[in-house]
Length: 139
Image (cartoon, rainbow, N blue to C red; front, side):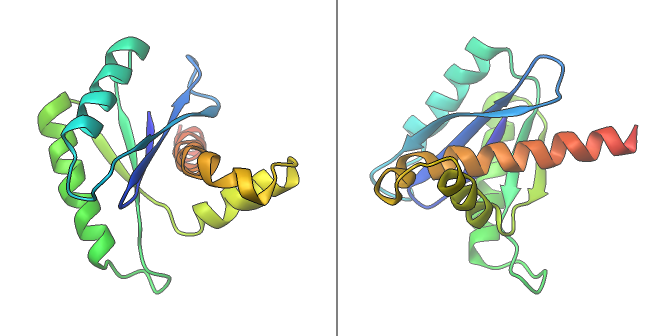
């Protein structure tokens, strides 16, 4: 499972059974940034339904490779995920994934007005695909 954690949304992506490709799955929306109970519950539902064994979470680094406020919030979210799910959570650099997701949606003909509902799950798919590709090169 790949996750793109944002202040009000979490993009979710899943891989195929052979861990070759990542596909956008859904975007979980919450009303307030610090209200995570329902978000975590939905992630747990997806894990149970889809047989997820590992979580890949995008780490929002600054362009100069430093970690800022968003990275700290992501680390706190990672700790919550590990406690609640018992699964390993791997952090992956997510710089420019939203830009890439927007470009892909544009190239596939999704209108500007319709991209908002797809961009987070597409970014999650890019994060997960980057991780899957890095595992192939390591093996």
